[in-house]
Length: 477
Image (cartoon, rainbow, N blue to C red):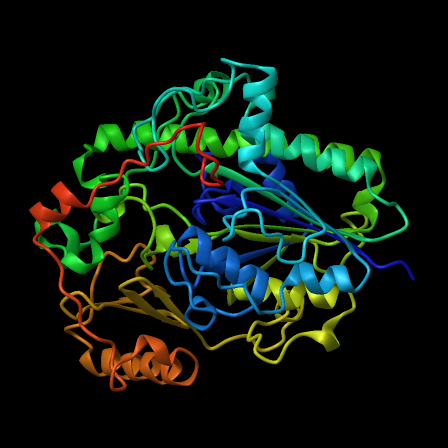
């Protein structure tokens, strides 16, 4: 029996609710809909550290960020000395390829992949062969949410390059070996610079308004610890409702441009006969707040930031698999990617003991999943347990509590009405960190950190994400 191929597709900074098939009538995602219609959609998938580098390390190691040690975008090396998914699949005879944004450190270290092409290689290629036509030549940075039109033809964007190079790998690989291909697309991460053709699609479509909670009626009333990433990335507190609608149009246009490119990838896979023996997994590293509660960017455990899309399509015809069209409502996270892929490759017996993820297919088939997800991202902490979400910030010891079953938009903070539940979920957080994340504790407690006044955060902590094509970096989107 020939081992199945595995295609992992990730986007960057895509919220869970940006799929038409998941109930969003304002967005066009026909090819992601197709994955859901012919596979499994996981409705409650979360990033345990919703920021780029740690989330990717979690996928590649199968352990949460508070275990692999990177809980922020830093120069840490969370995969160094650990078994990685590509390394284990390479050892098992798979041909392994990384294509697009990896956000590894060191940047060019392959961590088990046989071959790797990074996003920066697109900029090198375009500057050499198409000077003046490169994407991102508009001056907007890597965190700014102000929309701008793209500067490259749709066929020459970074998104399209990742897909075209992925297709090239599929056409030129060793056909006698199974493959693991990670196609990592950088959008809809800012800059929000869709091609004009995709921007035009959304010109007259009404956009959903941001959600504002009773605990966030004014920016000044939000606990300071939950605003730090907003002040440093995107400055979301500055925009009006009308501006947020325009920003959302650009964000949706970037996602539709990704979806269109995936249509090219899936079409070529069908022509090559690869849909019959390839598992396709689609997800994102984290989301984007998009104005919810006056916030922008990621780095928090609110739904817009931490709740992500996750789809799995099995090989074969869409009417042949019992999981076709299934929606799984179990709690799952990015650390589940590792054991799922290992089992798909028939390497389940080699999964390292420290891997704490679950096989996503077994969970979809009714196996008991996780009771809770514990997350750590910088100064933000979370416990997501069945219908409840507890958020804690070490800045001032602030906490919020939401009942997601009754309040999926996190509009009503019930922490004062249910202090016993807050205390119990905080104890659970400390117990989990005591067991596997001791370095984050001091004397068994989360050490309190101090935050600057909001005015100072706005003035001194902002980073618009300047970029230059002359500096080699994997952080250009």
